[in-house]
Image (cartoon, rainbow, N blue to C red; front, top):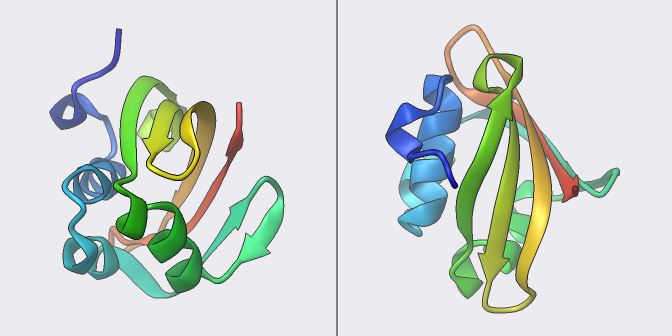
Length: 108
């Protein structure tokens, strides 16, 4: 049973999942801190290139199965048109302004 997005504990993470699921690139970019970074399966990636390839050009969607760490760590059933569906873990760092300064994702 997945958690409704509007019930996620951290506002920045809630906005991140909402933007991904709406395929709203402008809203997604607006919630990132300047110079935000990310990694996929332990390797740092270019955030603009990766999100275009893995989320926005292929209908990425996050169904949140559980959250921990005050809402900043999510266990997600992630799906997109390229890879299908997979269990993933997402960990977020949120700055003092409430923006996502880093996220890390990978197979769960």
